[in-house]
Amino acid sequence: MTATLDPPDVPRGGPDRREDDILERIAAIVGRRERPRDEVHIGDDAAVLRPFAGQVLVSTDTAVSGVHLDPELFPLEDLGFKAVTSAVSDLAAMGGRARAAVVAVVAPPGSDLEELHRGVADAAAATQCPIVGGDLASGPCLSVSVTVLGECPGGGAVLRSGARAGDRVFVSGPLGRSAAGLRRRREGASLADPLVVAHRRPWPRLAEGAAARGAAVHAMMDLSDGLALDLHRLADASGVGVVLDTVPVAEGATEAEALSGGEDYELLMTTADGDRLRMVFLDRGLTPPIEIGRVVADRSVRTLRGQRLAREGWQHRL
Image (cartoon, helix red, strand yellow):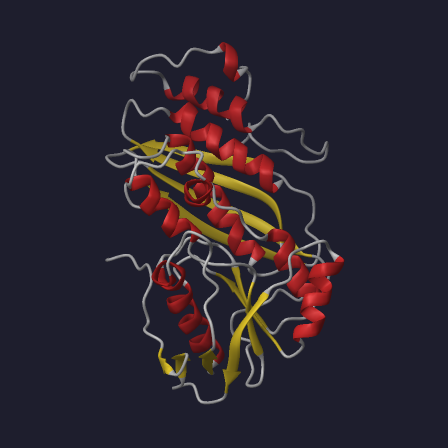
């Protein structure tokens, strides 16, 4: 891509625009941020980045119109925003920071790709994750695939496989806001409704992830598919069981939405030193995480308030 045009001065045109013209407009939208002089972003066959600090993190996520966002209820910008922030959330779950992202879009002819990429650009600016390249192709369904590159200075990326018997289980905030927001939007709530915003403009917990890594948590992951399902995944990876005492439900949400609604992107953490975890969060000006249970050695034990914790949450049907 070569960014040569200023998007506010360029008309959108019709559905038969040339690919190069569209790419110029997209590059102008997502390439507004200044880049370091020794890096090459959009405009060549591949991006050139400075050396990474510590461990290198790589993750890919895809957002599909009609699956991850209802086009009848939400503007196209929101699909672009969610595609980027959900991918960046995977870096937050490792305790890392974002360095760059590439975005590949498949779209039916006539799709408003400028609107889509305005959402991409908003998310890139908000997360300080520049878009350094990508791809564009026509196809029957609109999808946005984002590959993010990040780093963990000094190493020590937090895995979901490190939970130990005796650890306490924490989440970074109340749950269920995204699912409640989708429900409220379907009931007629405005796009500005706080719960609706939580669904259409999710926020990756980068600062919280870095704080948790600084507090040496044993295991961590982001809650993209619902607490009930993702907690099972963390326990499976660690070979442990989990006993939950409570579920922190966000105001306006239900416990069912908090357990299995998904797309909250809060962080799930385990640590043997809850006081240290809280102290690090407070020292960094963050709201302290919420303790919800404990890790046990018997991997067959997965309970909530003494009852079996169902493995429920969002899963694609493939």
